[in-house]
Image (cartoon, rainbow, N blue to C red; front, side, top):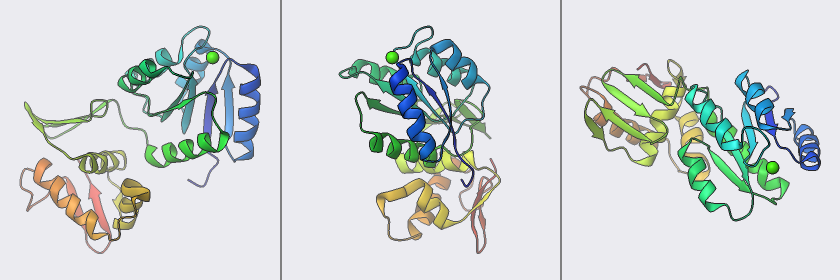
Length: 228
Ligand code: CA
């Protein structure tokens, strides 16, 4: 991502909105902000953001409503929610409706920046909706379940993340290094062989004939390409 990432901040506390916007701009973000939930939802719906920061308690539509309604429209933009201290119930609820991460107020700005960076790295391109279908396979990004017809496939967390990344970058040739960096990230897996092993496992689960893959293709000398 070489362009300036676009960020929408929906926060009703004027002080926090201003200081945060300034700080994010100085970190290279193009920042738009909204002071209430209705404006926030309207601006978010126009799309084109790389990441959204939603305060939970807002006048008008609250942060949860915005998140839920965006996800229902199939908008998969990464969302970081800001919750007040001790709102653990809120946290669980937010995860269910499709938020990607949380930060409890008050927070340190470097912590926020780190979370945003992680979200953007994880985010990839927009997915077509909360579920994705190819062949007889249905992937539910919210429940992280994968179904083959009526049968639920048992994918490990890494296999799911790998599949998700493939779907988000379908028809792109992805090198082992890119997959390792994007899917495994800082877990510092030593070898790109790890990618091959996980691709093989994933093929066992989603391919009709894992020996003759039709979904996760090998691009010789380059890497893999998902064409589902
Ligand atoms: Ca608030």
